[in-house]
Image (cartoon, rainbow, N blue to C red; front, side):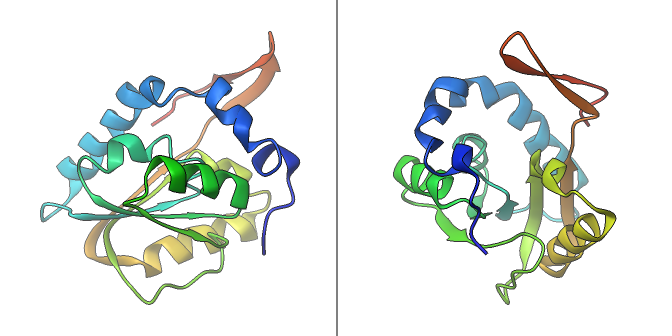
Length: 159
C-alpha cells in the first residue's frame, strides 16, 4: 500500500523549499468557492484525497473539518506536523474505505498520478462512495506538465 517514491518519503523535507503554503492561497480559495457555490447545503466536512504535505489544507481547514488521505508516509508526517488538528490517514485513494461520508471530497492535483483508466475509475468511485447525497466532488487535474527551468510548467485549463 505505502508509496515507495523517494521524493515523497525520504525527500519529503524538500516540500518546504518547493511549495510555500502561502502560494496556495488563491488556488485553494477558488476550490473553496466552487465547493460552497455548488453545494446544496453549506458543506462542513471535506475529505481531501492525495493531500500530500497538507499545503492545500492550510486553507481548507478554515472552511471545513478536513480528513486527509495520502499514500506517502513522508508527506503525511509533514501534514500532521503542520496541522495536528486534522485527521490524516495513510491509504490509497483508489481502494480505501472509511465507512463515513463527507459533504465534499476534493482530489486536487493528485488525480494526475492515476496512470490508467482503471486507476482513474477507482479513484472517482472511491470519492463518490465517501460523498453524502447532494455532496460536492471537486477534481483538479493539469492539462500537460513539463519540466522546464528546474520547475514544472503546466499548460491547459486548471478548472
